[in-house]
Image (cartoon, rainbow, N blue to C red; front, side):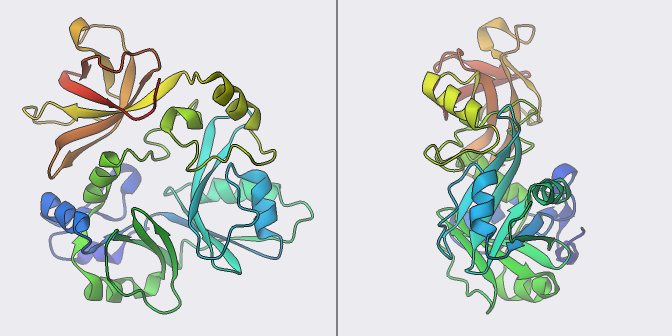
Length: 321
């Protein structure tokens, strides 16, 4: 779904998973600094929006999600996962309940499969699932923003900022009143700096929550059964996930950033050494320079010097080995 804000001055379209919104509006670092200072907004209108209504919406979702939501109070933001039977991550939901409706935004293009799964699990529960992507756009206000939220708009407030579920028809008016606009590259750079994983970037077909630090934020360890819980409990008790997320400071002399999937190896072994992991997201940060997240084998030493492709990389621990 193409955003009307791509018509703003300087807008350069994003590619790949974030196609449909702006990568930037002409000055990546200026946009990052504005967000870091609590100014402006990010157009996330390409993300899917799913709502669940009905008397049983929370008790029903509680049975399906990794998060404890049966008594989720109105206005309290949370995030949750849907796992496979083997505990691999299939969906990530960023949700809030407004007292009558659960609102969730999800990765672009995943709402169809998510809704199909939810519909297959309804049985006798009084809950209605709807795809609201066509009429609702997600807009992000950074932490510290004093921007006023339009009346009637559902807000999901977190330490990282506020996600607004805004009527898509009001997107251009919102942009005119709440600029400057920041592109998805600025938003992603701050996400990488904060070590926050993203479905489809930090995950592959065999990723489990422990590898990314999603235990606690998206997985509740004291709740009842859900699909994949056995894997979560087993790995938590053993304390040995097969891989772990790391943060990388990349060599700033390189012109090109290592892309998603770039092999990570020990620097001592060089570019022909054994692959120990791969880059998941890389970004250019306004203060830190080139940075990245990567998924590496658990037994990689926390002080090991690494290379991402041909780029030297110093690691910081995100998930303890």
